[in-house]
Every structure is written in structure tokens, then in C-alpha cells.
Length: 355
Image (cartoon, rainbow, N blue to C red; front, side, top):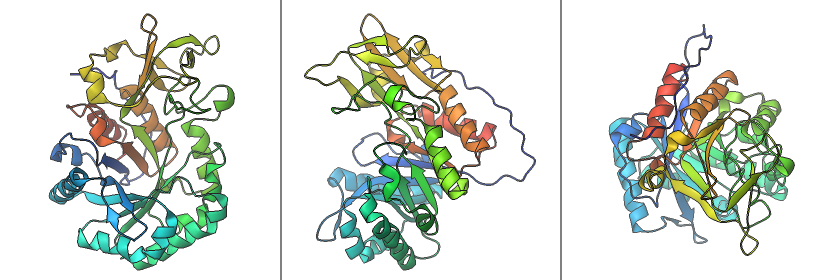
């Protein structure tokens, strides 16, 4: 069994009756690992990501295997009595024309709702986006679920296209994209090396690239923390050719050697792959400033960052203390073959009464 780090038991005071919190698990149409009842019983919602809408108004899967995976998830969520949604991406101009297609897809497949993932609407589309959600909500049944994926804030003004008051009047919940803060991208954000989803802190131009910065914005703007879910990414992120720390005492943030002016690495590595490649995850260092784990191999110049029991506990405790509505997982099927991260997530949520 993989050792993802000890799970701290955090004691919290709670004299109020428990309110059900969300554990929303996204599933990919591209993975080939088995979807199991054991996984689904640990979730409140399962979301299939993603379905695309064409310019002709048709909802399509990436390929036939994606369609089969959707059908498998649909069947098993019904057996597990777990709510199922699908996530739709693409151009909102198509969405507004073909609202009926979305509603019909929910009804035909006997699922519970839809997540809208437009990455990201510009300021000029702010009114159009909230109007679209209002029109869609009106066409949906009252018991059907509507959610969106919202961006991290403070990055190229991504949040400018979101009319939060208008949106929250229509949606059941919001999954906030609180990851990808550091990654081996082929652009100006490809440096420095660092954690994908730090709870706190950053470095240099990325000082505000963390979960807390974004959630303080959303909670302050809306005063509705219960509408928001924070993410726990189930992938690992690998950098190669990693060298010195950015600054003394900040070993988690490092420089990397570039090739053709680009960093090298794997931005989305499944935990199954990490296990298969024989990484010793017990070697991980836990950084208290960001609340994240990483392994730096000086000889190989490699750097791997991933979630552990400690980081999941810290994120869950944050969600609890901030009165958030829940957590969401990207992606359940990137876990290892033992569902180690999912098992820890569920165990921690129960231990903290965040259920």
C-alpha cells in the first residue's frame, strides 16, 4: 500500500447539528481505470467531464470509449444512489441557442444535472453568462442540479466575467478551480517550480496564487461560503531539470533549467503512474507555509508534488472552518488502484464531521 503520509486528527468544536457537505468527484472520459461502487459510496455527487457541444447543437463525447464510460458511470451512480451530473465545455454562444439540448440530455439519460465549465468568460460576456444560467435554470426542473466551475482570482483578471450575485441566484454550487498555480507550462507561467494547489502563500509574481487568496475574495464578495467547493487534485505533477530554491528558506519553490525556453515535466500524472514508476512517497517533505507535499531528488534533478493525508486534512479543515459547502475532486480516476486518496478524503471528512 502506498504511504501518502500520516493523517492528522484535527479536533474542532461543533455544537450545531451536522449539515451534509458535498464531496463532488469528477470522472474523466479518457481514463481506463474501473469505476467502482466503493468509489461512488464515498461521494455525494459524481460528475462526468466532459461533454462538448458542437456548432450544430449536438452534445458529443470525445470518442466511443468516452460514451461507454459515461454510460457505466450513469448505471453505477443509480445503483449507489449518488447524484450524477455531466460537465459541459465549449463556446457559450452555442449553449444559449441550444438550451433545450442540455435539458433534454439530462432527461434522456436520467441524470441529476449539469456543470457549466466555460474557461473563462471575458468581462464583455459577464451579463450574457449570468443570463444564460438564468434561462437554463428556468428550463430545468426544480429538483435538477446546476453548478459552474469558477476560476482562481488575481490571475489575468479571470474573475471579471463572473456576475457573482446573478450566478449564485441560479446555481446550486460552485466548484472553484484552485489548482494549476504552478506547472511546467509552455508560457510565462511555466516558472517557478512549486505546488499545484497551495493552501497558503506563493512566491514572486505568484504571491497570491493560493487557495486562501481566492476564497477570501469569493466569500467576501458573496457572503455565501456554503455555495463554494474547494478542490483536491488527485494527480501528481512532475518537473525535470530542477535546481536551486528561489529564495533561502523557501525550498518548495525552485528554479528549473529550460530547454527551447520551456520547462520539462508532466503536468498531470496519475497516482497509478506514480506507483507504477516506484516513487517512494514516504520520502515527501511537508511544507508548512503552503500546506503541501513534495519530493525533490537532487541527483536526478526531479521534483514531484502531490496531495497527502496531511494536505487533504488541512484543506478539509479549511473548508470546515470557513463554512464552505464542500470539496470537489479532480479527477477520481487519477487515484491509485487502491483509491488511497479518495479513502483518505472520506475518512478525514468523517473524522472532522465535515459530512
